[in-house]
Image (cartoon, rainbow, N blue to C red; front, side, top):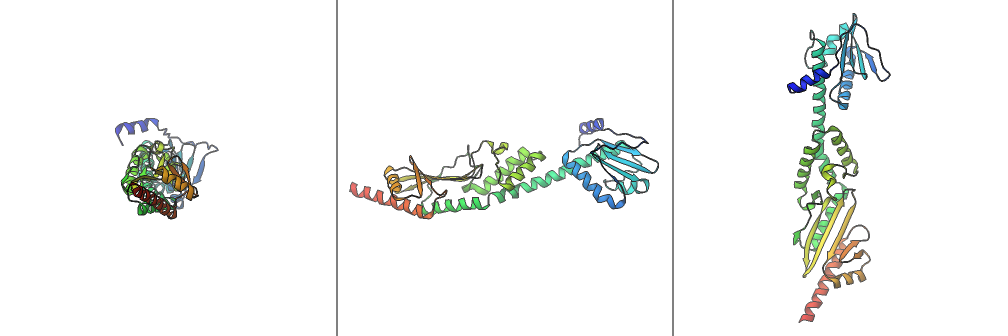
Length: 305
């Protein structure tokens, strides 16, 4: 903590010595302390630290007990015989120190508690991303892509980097690591957004509201350029930011397209592009496409001869 940060905390804290007890407000959670409550008090302080790192603290000294209060949220009445035990909540013995030092130390510990939680959230992010990109929907797309590459050779990858996917199938592990780095740089110190991000990843909710995903149309996929007997084919398989699967095949030969349109009801034609009617291409259709291309190009070669 810098001197500026510390001086700011000292200025903002409301630390009061008084012999009178504080008036309780309707939102106040109050307990009478005994040593058995040590864990309960620690848990309550941690939960308050989750809400914000700094709180106004008051310590009131009485004849028979001291009252420790965090704003209008939490009050602990501690009999004097248990006061030293109560202080073991903190990292050092505060006996003999004034309330100002006591308050400074507590606020520092609240900040440390937040940092511990942030560290835990950051550690959760990488496994959460890896798990998401290996869920059933993503694995199903991998199978379709692998089917394509088993029927048609990959001439090159044409996957766009500007509009996505965020993670390409051909560079999956590398891109997940890169995505993790971008998210940490953007949200690594933002507890609220990091928690929401992890929740959305876990429940497959829209991710486009987060800055890192905002400029991308797709979360995952590939765009493959293939050539089959001189016919240009471009296969695209993507999962968009709403977790919807989109597949298409560009065919650079009108005769092949006409023949496919006549022979197959498994696809819909829009110009030079074929889309799967059932949402996903099949190995059976890939075989038909390859046969159609081979037959037409063979016939063309015979005509030339």
